[in-house]
Image (cartoon, rainbow, N blue to C red; front, side, top):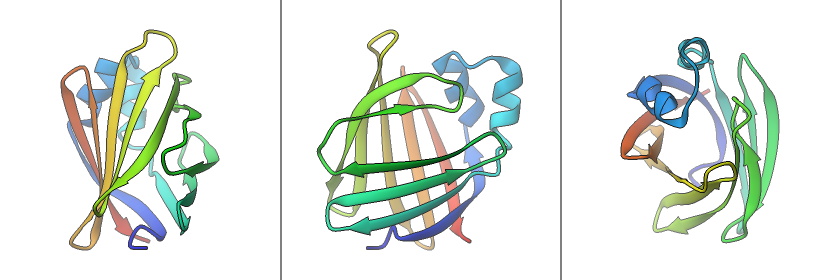
Length: 132
């Protein structure tokens, strides 16, 4: 699948405002904007293995399309939701466990980049990744 491979963050759009909407403090927002995130994605049918390596944490997530799972953001915010595949785009809706609000996310290949888009409380952010 096109998502397979290792991707390194190249640039962000509106990421600090997005983190602010999530309730992330100023210091963590400043650090988070420069986390040097690297994502390795492996797909086998409808199962995905995703490794996230950054300045702050290293985690491995396994999920199956359409099946809910729990996930924690780098700041400790706990979410539950699922990824689905809509055309060539991975689409997710995660509900925060602390307040019930929904974080929407997409991953898609645009040209030679992996673009992750997040929307929370009306604030949209994008992170652009290049193949490592």
